[in-house]
Image (cartoon, rainbow over all chains, first blue to last red; front, side, top):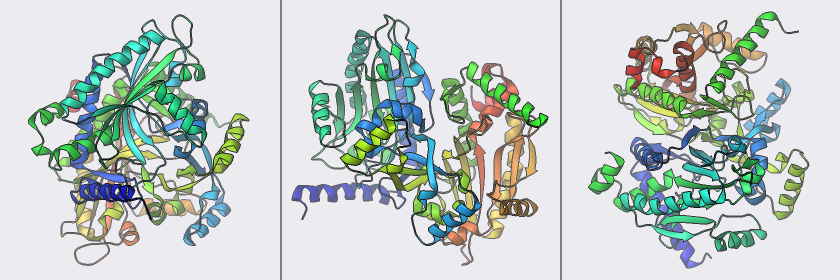
Length: 309
Length: 309
């Protein structure tokens, strides 16, 4: 039997997800964590996206947009496979002849696994919007560093009943690269901005020192170290369940991890440090519906004004 | 040695792609057919997307938005694996333990194929924006049928130097389902609208009876039959090479193919017919840069007005 708290959480999670479906805001597809979005949900999300864009525009970032796939070479270099193998989605394709094709169709008709005929391609699904950016920063940065605005769908293989834990979701990020001081100053600015951002949306948010879901037994040590060093700060809100709030914004300091891996140097020749802030667009949108109700035209006037409707 | 015409085409293709990179409109990633988009390119594309949306809005479609993955069950039913196995991208993930993880990392470090540890998940990449829609139409349609507006990134495994043949690109579609007459009337309306749409963008477009790239030797027969029956009409423009124009819009009549597969009935109980029109957003955007030049502020006034800048 499940512990009581967990049972309650599951029921609560299911109830919020089912209510979103009944309201027509999300569309079930038969796979956990994969949903269609209604016109209203999508419009709200795009308005959140524009708000993130406007909030960050005063820093004049370079805007780049990548499709939700990443070259395998870039991915292999990133260290993601070491830390989070359980979340990765690789893309495979069929390169067989007509004979192999007939065998493939036969297997599919018999309800057997037909994927063995599929070999790995040169791409994997993007695990976070910032991954395609680092190879583009290779070389020596200008004195003020570089600042990039990216947004894309991301994939995480974690099928879940928790509607806030989707297999594909959009993340809008700012990525800063430069010397330690430049990156620290940039982080300090965003730590102040975050409070205004969540206040403007009327969300009851808290801030937490956090860690990533590292794989395996060694993962706990890595997570503890990350938390102790204050490398990850999350803005959390009550969402699919109230006992365990959900992160909607994450501010990450990578030290010189990506600078080393992708040969990025600060102007003084030292290895560049990097940091990113990521806004989970589906999660912020879900938090708005959770906080203010399913009828967005009844949301507080200041929230509607901020989102422009 | 390659035939002369093909060599010329390849050079021409490469030249347009390289020019787009030099202008900073597209960002190379090291994998053929996978590009980043600049702020200007992305903004132009989103304006094309909005123009498609506005053009179709007078029909009051139901708007749905899906992430670029499709449940494997939905995909298996679609017939895509039979006709286009070479274009499919399946998504695989790692479900091994720490021992398997160590072996995986060792293989990756040695530059070996580490993908064998990855098994098929419940999802595949969406091959066309309309595929997630059909299961949602299951049952009996209302008298006027149903009309759905969808847009998403799509995947096709066809790495190419032709910049118009990307591995991931966005497709905005309208999908109509109903009885034969309803679907025919809807197609006739769009066939008239298409001309105004491309004229408004100042594109030198032609219209062609076309066919899909069916797999294998039998594929040619299927393609000929599709063309002879007039099931696919494409709007084509000179793009990456002038000898072979590129499709930017495609109007497809599926007869009762999807109606049968996904149990969709017209109001009179007959199997529903379906049709879709797809706008290739990257291709239309590329066609605009090809036709009017890399500086979009020098584009004809009527084109800029249509796109709202």
